[in-house]
Image (cartoon, rainbow, N blue to C red; front, side, top):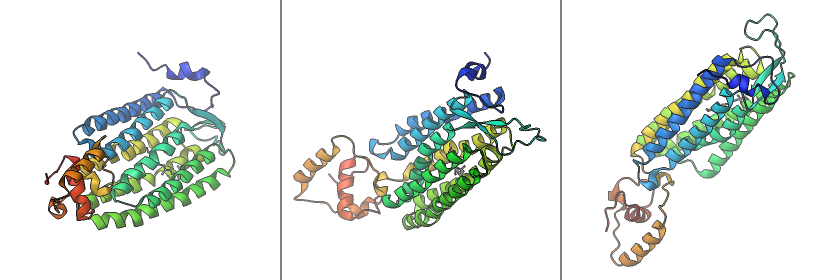
Length: 314
Ligand code: RET
């Protein structure tokens, strides 16, 4: 059973002179499988957590599924468009003056959905306030759209988009280094450790993307098969590896501490009834509960009484 994707999809739209080969296709399908299996593992693991404690599992599973679909597209030689190159490089053994290069715009559709989710994973871990999260995500979206438009541009003006993208990227990094770090330091403990571990992976790996772009869509230096390997390795570290470190770090963090404990259906009503029954002899046990350092004792008593995982009242 060989890989016939290239031949089958050669009839879909137009094709560049310089395209992935079956090797590139095989590799893209391999990464597609890694992303898909990781997503399934994350979903399976989410069932070991209480219903209210699955926020990061769900965000992470979604971004892994989206990446899997994007890699399916690229393995199938779809989600691409031929673009004339700025530098044909006649002497190059990699791109040999092919003239048009295959640009996978589907890569950017993936990133425009998944990079904000990765930022949510990291910034919400540090308890960063939502207005800051939204502004950081906006900068991230600008960065990705600049990368897309630049990749579709034939002339040297493509580097203008790359430069604007870099400016937006610096804001994202600034936000992680300043706002995120401040939040993580305020929590200390496991939250801080997890934020720093994942933050270092994210910032170092993300810095390599503009370089990959510079030698692929930008400068037309490396073959689309090499581009597949370059981006593929980055994506496996930026998504599955990053996610596993993050979720491992979250094994002992209470979602209510971070404000993303999702109430089970009917729980709010149940809590109301409980409160009405017990309001005569209210227990102020928030301090002793230990896991809810970020909430006021009053609020902590309510949360502990209702979420079923660490009820010390009753
Ligand atoms: C572009 C070109 C414009 C300048 C910059 C870029 C950065 C892209 C990044 C992408 C990250 C992607 C991830 C994917 C996960 O699988 C758009 C290449 C700065 C940082 C993390």
